[in-house]
Length: 139
Image (cartoon, rainbow, N blue to C red; front, side, top):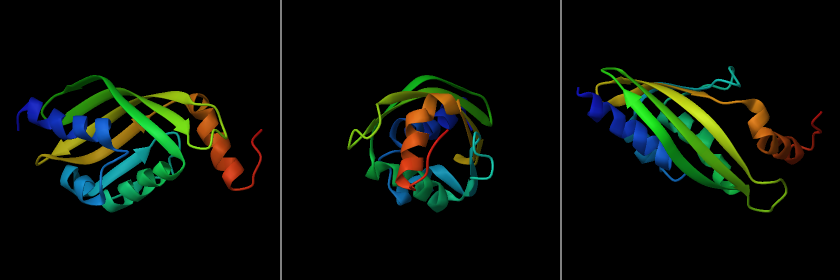
């Protein structure tokens, strides 16, 4: 597969994950795709349905803007630098921008592995909101 063809499913995912349906996730991700949210190594999601369930839940509480800064790829790997802009719908925590680098492995035109790298300190408002929602305190 051509490099540019590998980039397109990754670009679509990075620009639209917050609004994609479960069906659209299945069009982009291989059935056994593993999504690793690297700062939370035990929180991986296997398969498009699990990845969609993990990420779509954020729509309830957050307005999310997605921006691809840079994207490069070769025969089987694509790397995308992006910024995700979060604003809590109830203003319970301050808005924030989350720089993310995703590494995607491609096979047969679909994403078979997806690893997102980001700094937990940059996501402090999100983590604080999650703790508040569970009735917990953050340090």
